[in-house]
Image (cartoon, rainbow, N blue to C red; front, top):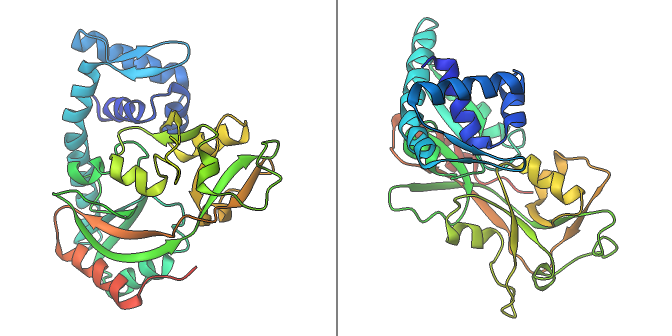
Length: 293
């Protein structure tokens, strides 16, 4: 299997959507479909269940995804280390971002690069699905994620920033005319969610129950934030977001409503295997202190 074919399979396994996979890879949808069909013929089994509405991994596809992820990450790392060695760079720190505000956190990135010119710093968006998987497979060295993170094999480092939470609704939603909302109101409407999120972690972001004990329903299971805000704009769901997303999404068909009774989310560095580069980034964050919004 060619490296590009592996990338196509893993991207589709993450997006579960042929169109978005084609957009990410800058190819046609037909090319993605062709690659997957070729892989299925070679393997002798179906990797994805396809319908007009959904794309799902089969058990065989899930097994192949889990086996290929670390192999693919290792190949990319080897190629990148060779390229960097030719330029005198001795290592790369790969940071995955759950939040959207990469630019806001530039003081941390700039300070790290100034202090350690011998290392490269890569900052990438982290997957909305199974968010800690990339740490465990070695695709990311550090993840910026909201707290709490209570995983036995992961270490929580210093906090980078905290943020208030707001509710996104479509401009013609019945809540749109309000100046603010409470958590209790969220139980009256379908909310979105991601796949394979730890329950305690999802509950910290948006409780599963309202203060009066009503279920806050998760109806839409999505793979990325762009898909989520799209359903909000269509009026199919409402969604809680950290305030910083309003700096990055200017959407005339979405209203942002303060939530009066949710505490601030804190975002921290999280890692699995500590290295000299990770310790250096943690020192940068500790020295500069959490950013204030």
